[in-house]
Image (cartoon, rainbow, N blue to C red; front, top):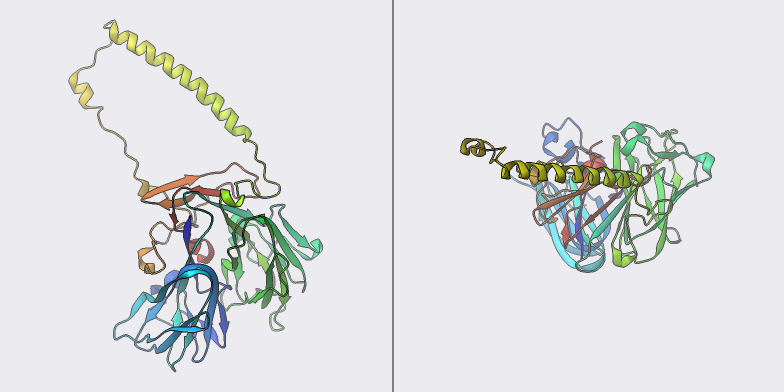
Length: 414
């Protein structure tokens, strides 16, 4: 079945802190050695955690001379206890990775020493659908009609720093209890938005009417756009509804707001998924495609007629080509797939959660394609769907069994 590796930064609100955590600052001379020049410091006795449905995870950070012991637990059981101290600084280091039985898991990283412990980024491997079928990823902008905002007057289309959002659009609210819901069909969903000092100190997310849901905190020391606000997997076939609710804003930050950017939905054909699996997306062939086919057909007919005329001239001796002429035109243009720019949502270099971040080049977001790397080949597809769905990658499909889906550059490039 299609598998993918998701990679997210330390600035993601989906990574929750229990105790005291703070952002690393430029006072650290080696800050630029961390992914996206960002890391989170976990104070002694504190921990960070995340949940996922899958088979493998990885935690990445630094090993330095002032770092102490840390402990990793999975589903309440200690998986490892080791030191992060090193005589020579090591960045983008794999602090710990582990293969697990497929299922729901909760991973916790705890600082058990009096020294420093930082986290740079984290990852997990997940899968959807059946063997030998494509992975479909639908990216749904905030303006798509599948999103519903209640009450409507509580939401603005101009949240702070909206220009840094994907597509330059987003939704925001500072009304406690205001909700945003998305109806979709897929097995997994990821929701993205900003984190920072003016972002909600508490918001709740529930799927399919789940009572209470889960709560998260988007408030961070520094602003970062396109962060992972929520992720859920193994939802199963059928229609699902995810609901995001503003729970609280900080009294010290009266202008805080819950802001939403877009969502990604992961599905396959066997789960009933398609590129048009969202309300309001047309399944008809775009008019531009019909026009393109007509033009292509006309050009092809003219080209064939011209070729036949050239053959006729050769046969009648009216055109001759010397050997030197042939030698000058025998080169072949070769397209190197590695030169094709990769979309922010796909990282073809990362092959497992255990791969160090140094192996992953930092791509600039490209809204022209969504590419999937598979068995040494890169496939890009542009969908001609509603403008509210990313036309650059509103949908993505791949064939095969293993994919590397990373929202790192998308979510944490700021």
